[in-house]
Image 1 (cartoon, rainbow, N blue to C red):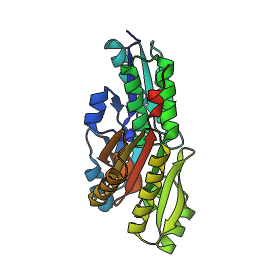
Image 2 (image 1 turned 90 degrees about the horizontal axis):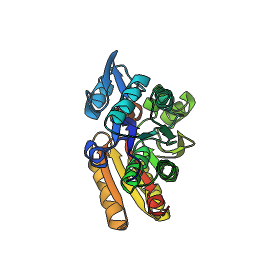
Image 3 (image 1 turned 135 degrees about the horizontal axis):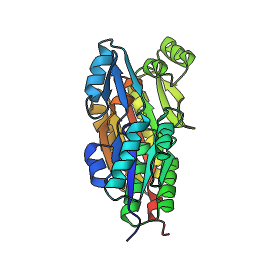
Image 4 (image 1 turned 120 degrees about the vertical axis):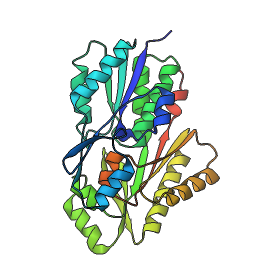
Length: 289
């Protein structure tokens, strides 16, 4: 029997609750602050409520989990029989979550490996899923960590938003970029590179932007040996359904296809009308030790 390892991630990984439960992944919630009131993502606030708050003009922001939340999760894992923990976090360029997770690791007696996914949403989520599957397969902790890193590094996270304003408010892009987008009335297509969102190109309509997201995602699927895909939306879900149908029609080799609403924390920064597609290569799981 291999080492008893618990996989932990943060709620920005956007793992649907049933998927997290199926894989035995512990999820630490980030916080959403609405007009000064703090809510735990996935526990006391939903993406729909965040959307309502944004559209209603409320002051909405986000916050990383406190170090104590990670410390408690690690201790709970140890009390349940875990000998070590592998924690997969959203990009350190987007949040201080990695720092909190590492600070907590110094406060517990069992080993904790913290993996910076370098991305967000299901790019982090697929890395956590891969780690959990590797644990079930009996891999040693160092191999579990390496698989999580490889899957995270393989991930393509591409998305579009109706406006760059919410990303600007959260400090995720510059004011100049948001202003140019507004003045030219263009719809941006963005991709996470080097741990941060970057506008890859701009088009003249929302429909074209969503088409561009799908084209980029399909190219990533074609390039992956064992592709897993997640489609996430905020607001009207029909355009997400269209993306799912296209992916299923054109690609029969998907190892996983996950659909979900953009998580509450990410909703704060994306705003209504967002479409995101994540593609990760799960092939490292198939590599024998």
